[in-house]
Image (tube, rainbow, N blue to C red; front, side, top):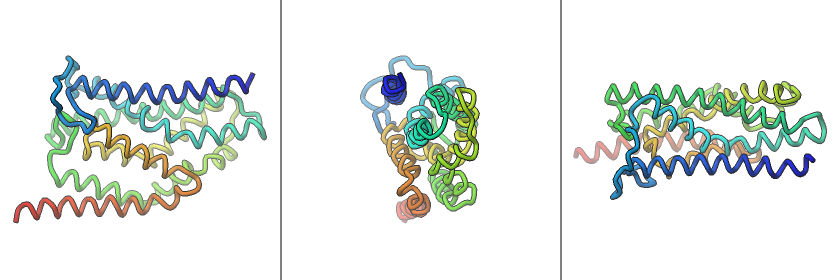
Length: 253
């Protein structure tokens, strides 16, 4: 029964991810945007303006599912390994997913609130794009610097080696999976919130930017190479910030 259920659940998991990406694409089209988040030749199809909290909360929640669920794959594979050596179950596997996703949906509400506040302050425009090169550069530099922080390293260690977390916090059944999935979600938020915040640099409806950020976060969590990615990414982001300011200074000359 387990062997038959496994492919169904994995297919359902990836179907949710693909569905979330499709919804994001449909939302971008509805707002009259191309894949880079820019106003295109098409006109919006009557979608509510992406400025209210409720609309933004829904958008961020779907974005979290699209971008963060793929990063959970190594964790779910580690949980599956315990189905052989321990008493892990498919119900627990689902609990891990739901606990993890619940935390990221909570993070989506915070990001939506932050976007509303930034919009009111004039720091971002209606597309969620920073209105000042200094704001964009500050975000890039700040997130790059965070890559070197103790909190980033602590959270990344758990995300990169979920088996160690499971062995130290093992719980059985659906409820146990949920209780493990919630802390894993918090560790993941601590590890990856910066990449999500960089949506205000590339545009929160920029699908290409979202795709690139997803790839980077997935690579960071790969057990074999993830540890060699975080700090170089920090350097790259800080260099991008300096380059952005240098380009603006050159334009003034």
